Amino acid sequence: MINLRKIKSLIIKILIIYALYVFISGILIFLFYHPNTTYLNYIELERFRNGETGPDRVALIEDKHEAGLSRINLIESAEETLDIAYYTIHEGISSNIFYGKVLEAADRGIRVRILLDGIFHNLRGTSRNIKYALIIHPNIELKFYEPLNLLKPWTWNNRLHDKYIIMDKELAMLGGRNIGDRYFFEDQHNDIVYDRDIVIINTNNNLSGSVLQEIKLYYNKIWNHRFSQTAAENLKNYQTGRGIEKTKYLREFTQKINEGHLEVFGPPLDWHEISVSTNKITLVHNPLERFNKEPHVLSEIVKLMEESETTFIQSPYVIPSSQMTKLICTEDILEKEIRLLTNSLASSPNYPAIAGYLNKRKGIINHGVQVYEYQGEGSIHAKSLIFDNQLSLVGTFNIDARSSFLSTESIVVIDSEEFTSLLIEAVDDLKKESLLVKEDCSYEINPGVEKRNTSALKTLIINFFRILFYSFDFML
Image 1 (tube, rainbow, N blue to C red):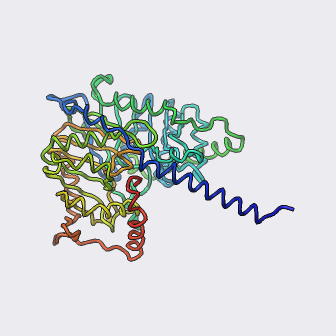
Image 2: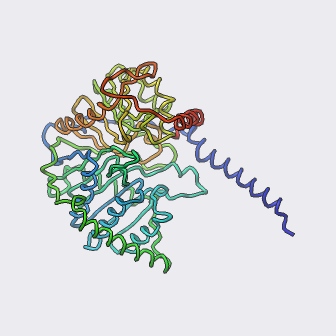
Image 3: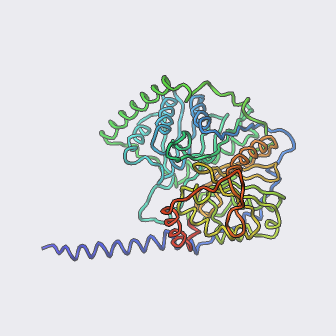
């Protein structure tokens, strides 16, 4: 007779052993595994600048509607290839339009490559049929970066955080936005995200001298890397059938939107008209490694902070770990003017991140950083830096250990006074809805801005998380 009590006891023991295995190999090991930081010694800031106008122009995309329209325009305008990379794509109207347009492009012969994070891609559950639809199309290739492996918990932190659309050899769009309704539409539940994209326009007939060459090489590097795995190609009959049905649905959905909501699509965009010139644009990205990566992006930022008199930082998440502090808190940096714009307790939707930030906030202010916290509706999600009103950085990098050491991250450094002026205007609009944090962590009174209220429940949860994650800022 089967002894159910013994089986139950055995299962509990196995689960406990597995939980310890996950904790040690998926969390604790990152506390003791310190990455190499010699990259900082080889950085040459001269490569970011150019004395004359270069081949790349750039457009700043702040508005939600323009962000959606720009993506549609890039997909519709493709003549040869579309290379797409995203951390996550949320189910909703915007993702249906996005996938529908991708299928339309593939139908007319465009070669499409889609690279998604292997854990947070959201092509499971009710969205798994979209995966089947993409797999069965002959002109679409789908890969997942570092898919979930239950036997290798240390790989769970190696996440793809890049966000790109590369159209032919002419245009590339990148920034902080994922694909999801809250990034493109107003929401009656205040689930609004204010983000930022840029579109880079290569004015050459080839890639010579353009940052698009660097971006395409980086995309190819990730695409061909052993961490990126092709989605299952040999589908079962029922999966193929569901893929066919989903393809039909997405085509019909997109057609209805085309006919009934012309404002969603609009006329083709004149990218040259809405962009500004640059002297140079340079790509910087983290290496492709497991465990703690050498912090290439953070090191470049540190070097620029050392060489600049003023630094402005906008980041939705600011959680400097001890390893980050060692790199950032140097005399050359702390004597400079540093201003920071981030989410407040009320505005942040990321509970672990805001808990980590609140644990660090007083220390940040004590180091002389002017901290502004956003009090407006929704939350801010853009990631940008400005140095001496000349160089601008836009991309996916947050000021936290996850972006510094764990995830793939990429930014572009833009040498352009004209673009930087536009970016300053954009961040100033957000600062107008923000409050300066004083040394005692109270707010400096500003008659034009009211402190946004936080519910008692959210405050209670965040305070619990502050205790829970106090010693684990290296994972936030």
